[in-house]
Image (cartoon, rainbow, N blue to C red; front, side, top):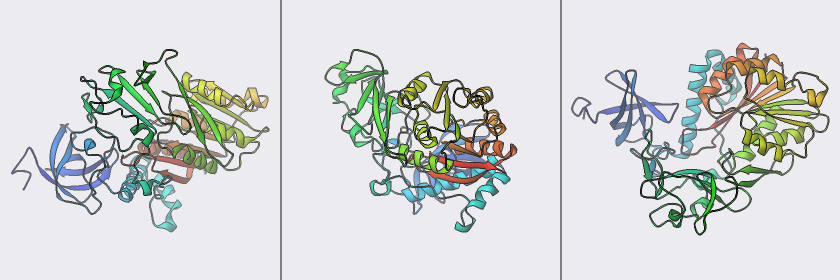
Length: 438
């Protein structure tokens, strides 16, 4: 059926993937970003958002399916459902190829041809524009399910736990959470018969945490809770223990339950390994770490530099810095500062006054910024320090592309790139980039 025959449910041929979990299609010359589709498919659309420059739509009927389409692992996240699993209908290998294509396109379109050429040169022998997206742990054996150790829910007006409908403030009660760690699923948070309903009220924010060591923790509006005893008395925050194996030995952390920690069960180990490998030999060197959080990377960096080296880390969150200080208390070769990461704080932190008798500069800089990226001013300030190498951890390919373009303008180019599938069944992934002076 043609678009003209049924204007409210037009039919389109789906084009390539785009950043954000969509595919690109065209309808009467207009760009339409389509969710729940795959490249090469012919689908019937339901238009969900009309804007002057583009429309958004859901694929509500698949007329000609891709060979990479599989039954959705989470139908509740399908058209009209909750956000958080927009690739649930895509076979895992195809998901990783999707992400590789998005990374290559974003590096070229936003980073520019020079950045794209630098990355392409790294993989010429493999014949790929960017490296393949790496699998974590046993994801292939588990189909990428039960990987998330942190889940956030909201309680609807009837007291049932759920999530927001995509691009909406409406809470949809859930029956299943196939991405959640088994320990979270066993808590029985979902459904009308959940024993937790006596613990919370409509509109409450529920956080479920399955740490690598110890029992799971549930926070209701920031307070530790139990289905039998209701909210517990005492401080509104509780910490959990996380243990991460690494090349520098077992790493132990205490992290506030409501604090930030990588959600994939294999992500902490994967990122520690990737960052240490990218940083190279660190013995006796000065490392500046930006956006340090609770110290996931700070601890292995402090062990790696040894007594003759130094690590200075800064983060803008007081809670995160408090956690980091607890985790690094046995390492006098570290300084952990609470400050907004900007050009001024980068220059001040790089003085290393407390550890290196006023010797300025840094041999290695490690950055793990939030989704928005570090930004031109911070990247420029880092380049002014003239480190031997920069290790940049990014969770958004567009932000990474912007930061790599700024680094190239300031004399650095990417010499290694490693993407990781830390978020199966979503469009998100993580990238560790190594930059050296040109």
